[in-house]
Image (cartoon, rainbow, N blue to C red; front, side, top):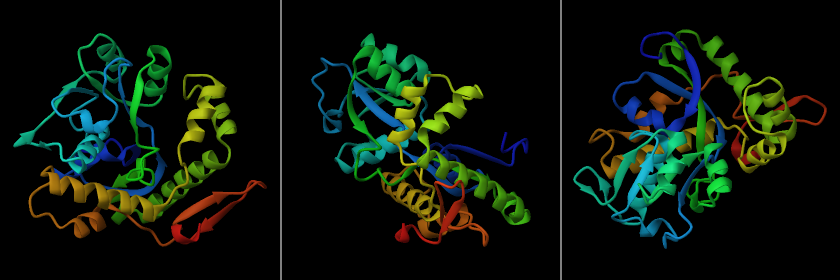
Length: 274
């Protein structure tokens, strides 16, 4: 829809877009929305206790360019497990996201990569063992899994529209951070999300919904640096230039917002001041 010009802005799993951007997708991220929401599971009797044991294992994923695969490669590369084209020491198998829990339950794969709410539901229903959670890991805890973006043409030709869109997203995220239960109520009342109030509130509370432009820039730069080292980005790419080309900043957009108890928002000029 982006390449065909049917949409000018959207939100999504940031890591999933990086390989597409590397191949020419013309978008620019404008803010991070929240951290977390991606987890990796094994069956309770697998004998696998952590990610260091995944060499030679079959891993079920929602797609070869999914953000869970991007994160997985970064994790395993740090552990010395080959994830490059010429040294792949794991096997990736693609299933529909909702079919992955059954694939693990039936033994078709050794590990699954899941996004919430499928992840939390599968953990409860099947009793899977979680071996990695992006929300809880030091490397990923401050990186955004989900982000807002606009096309590069909108960013350059219609900055006022991109500014309004970004401010709205950031304020919405700041509201969720401050009011997770009320946010869950809105989701359910407006039929925007399945589930129940208690579990949805718990999920929203487990992520960091504080939006930051600068932290999104760090997320993109860190991810691309790792992928370049792995060999998943075009050889010789200048990561600093690549980041500046695909992170859009606007004069009337602060680094972040905080939602106040009186219903107003306060802007933050830098994440260092939070």
